[in-house]
Each structure stands twice: as structure tokens, then as C-alpha cells.
Length: 64
Image (cartoon, rainbow, N blue to C red; front, side, top):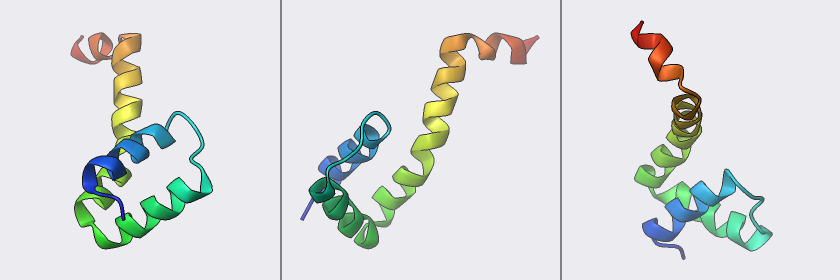
């Protein structure tokens, strides 16, 4: 059973690489039982997109 720290790490890593079957299974079980990690997993794609926009300088366009 994963703890929250391990689960959020796997959620983040899943954005960069495919998870193994064992990692996916453990993460899915944890997400079924933990609403905090489930919320994080639903928010991480938005955070990733926002950070990419920030890195491109999209934040300067919004302020003008």
C-alpha cells in the first residue's frame, strides 16, 4: 500500500514517463481510497500546462 508521498510522486512521474503495471496498480488502489491524492491527480495536468505557459512567457501577454 502506497502512502500519500509515494502516490503524489507517482502521479507526477506519470506526466513524464509511463508507469509500470505494478506502479499503476498501487497508485490506482491508493487513489480509490484517498481523496486528497485523487484531487491532486486531477489538478496536476492543469498545473503542468500552467507551468509550461509560464516558461514560454505567456504570463507577460496576460498582463498587457
